[in-house]
Amino acid sequence: PGRGGSNVMQIWARDSLPSFEELQPEPALLASSETIPTRAQMRMQRWPGKRSYCHTIGKGCGGPQHRQAWEELSTELDHNARALALHFVDDQCKDLPPERRAASARFVELLLTTGLELLCSVASKLHSLEVEQCWAWDLNGERSGEQYSAPWCIKRVLSLLLNGMIRSGWVPDISNQALGAYDCCARYEGCHEHFLLVAGRRERWYSLAPCMHWVCSVCYPRALGTQVREARERARVAASKAAAAASDARNAAMAVAISDRHQAADIFKEVARETELSAAAAEKFRGDDPVCPSCGARVGAAWSANLRAETRGGKGTSSIVG
Image (cartoon, rainbow, N blue to C red; front, side):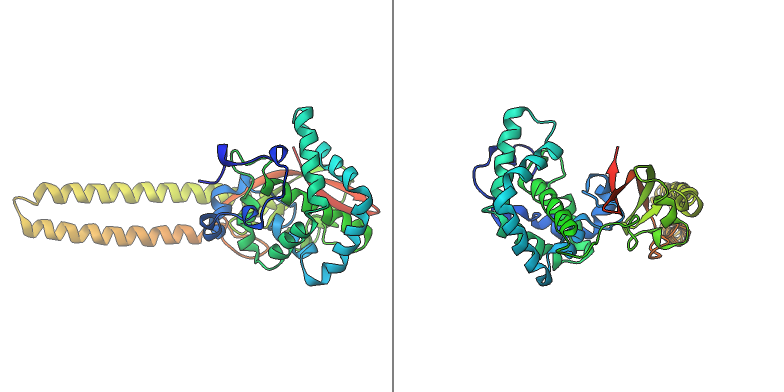
């Protein structure tokens, strides 16, 4: 359970900055961060080609080496914070009615002026975390009732600022010059060129759980698609057989328990033996699961997304599209 629903204050209702503590995921979510891709991958905020949206932000602009970039940004925002806030609302809040859009723009402008140090602090925190720890931040603000909350907004504003820093040359370009040359199969020959074939063209990519690496539409069917389906079916059949065998043995034991205790003891031993065999069989089926071509981790599920190649200043980037 998250902090969603009626307890969440949306950005259009705010007239002051949130605290840093309010922006962090709750302790229970942080404690279970490593398991989030298996249970909630489709709700996480994603950065195409990267294992974590928030980790990418942290590494892109949250380090001590990026302090000068924030100073440059502060000077620029002295002149265009309002325009940038309106741009953000036009892009991220276009489904809101006019009065809420206007109030949301005022909050974003507050973030870009008075709240700039808060934004920098969040980026610094994300820079200090491992990828797996950032998955809690990727999910925070994305659950039911949390849209347009402060955590939802902060991540997207930071992404906008990071892209601006990259375009201005204040920080290195960590965007996808193809699709994620670091965190997906674009490192393999052919995938890189496949994605850059036509700027603006949509391609389907697959995000693997629980490792969160990406695989292109060329590699996925060949390397993973059939294997994932077959592994799930094998696991289902194995579990069904094990459950049936254990149930039969248990029923047989109960039927003779009253009349013949010695025979019941033998049957219960057989139940234990069947359980051990079933566990060994289940382990074998897990060993047959497909593995990620990037890291070799077992793949439990795959989430697909259409990604669109874009060209800015002669360099390719990517974004998730419908």
